[in-house]
Image (cartoon, rainbow, N blue to C red):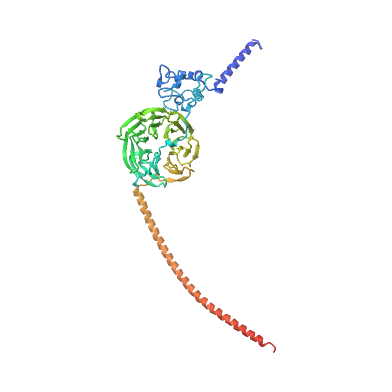
Length: 551
């Protein structure tokens, strides 16, 4: 072939074109999100559709058509257009939630996952030229103050309680149970075989509620502040929930007969039911009247780590260590919504006072707000690097959290940060706010319980979370009394000697004053004689001068 002929020129042009196409890749990477038909369906066919097709709908899910993929499966919708993190399909495919997909297989290659993620983030477009799907609008984050059922009447406080502790340790224990009363200056702290009560205003130790069932893992006051729920037990042995009457400090209920510790529990607003859960992966709804289970929830795939009834008691929010969170109708324990989005275990759930919003916290460091009416995600933000471990709503709709970054943070109702609180020496585990919105309590891994002013984050002091046995404190007080008595006796002796020295000095002063008076009188007498002598001498000088005058 001769140089300059059209054949090699054409071949070079085709080769250059091929290289350009291969290098540039699909056009959607630069200017448009992927589409279901062109980019996502081929991935589904290769990796997913052998189990999720029209004939074999594993989990009720068919991914072979756009409409069926959006419809979801037996667990509800699996795609949240515009929000990959909230999409159940993405969580399972990316192995950030259980069960990992594909099952018993390596994760889908990263470039395929990237296509799926960008397709969801771009609004789950069906085909080229199609429009992104717009998610339904979120409910307002504004607090409905009229819907907040605050306890009425005088503050509910315990009677005088014994100060003798059930157990003590070489150092304070990690604070895994912390609750503040919704009506009164009362704070409860969980410990080993006991619940410790403190005055929220003075931080004074008020007394002990025995919990011989084991370690206290969670504490909750009832919505009317009249009951205190303590739950826990012994690891891999037994779990129990105990209800105390706050005004009398007496036990009024013992519920549950678990074969492992109860890690999460709550009592409904009408005090008819207690929800409890733990390592057995089952949430039980137990009647307080007879202690019998009314319903069981078995959808969770890992340890139950959080449960809370809505303020009206009609709904229950639950979360587990695998990052699964759900809303349930209390009557019948029927599933109402799946709260998808956390990339780590759920560490807490909390209903806002008006019951319209529920907050979840996770090991992924995020806080998410969900609408009660449809389970839609309303807001999310990065709260604590490494993980959020505690959260609590204030009565005015603000949210307090704490976490692995060793501090607590106060957030406005819309999720904007309001202020940080001082950093602790160890991981901050639990947070609670007083009913008047004045103080925030933060408990950490080292057993420190610190109080802060919510208004300006100033430290207000620490409570003694490892009080010594009463006998030890009595011995210490008596020893201090003996030492004080001895010191007082020594001081009395020194005072007596000082008084005698003063008396001796005063006597010397009196004698000196008497002598000074005598000397003063003598001086006055001699001064009078001197004056008379001077006058007499002057007189005779005058006479002598007069005699010398010529006559």
